[in-house]
Image 1 (cartoon, rainbow, N blue to C red):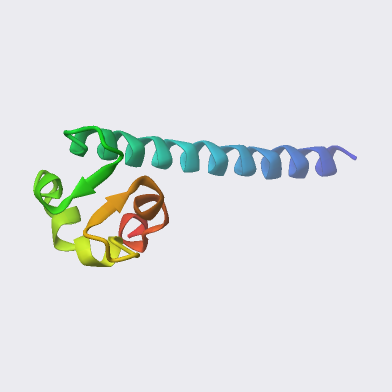
Image 2 (tube, helix red, strand yellow; image 1 turned 180 degrees about the vertical axis):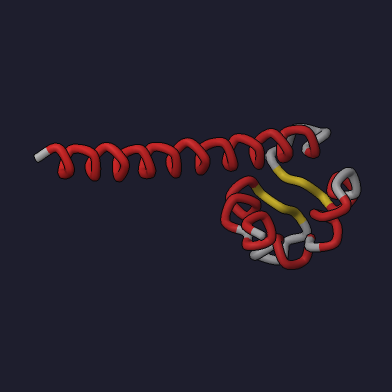
Length: 83
């Protein structure tokens, strides 16, 4: 029974740590988005993206709907942030 409890504690700890790391990553992405969105319209233009070299390099990839702007949803779902 003790071994089972230890395994459960370790398993639950891993799950909690993964959740915390996921939230930290989202918060960092949201923070980057807010800092780049200078006019606070909820979108990052190409000009605003110039404030982050990595986003600027990947702008067309992140701009999924190809409207010339990056939304928060596009940024959060983009694979370039997961690299």
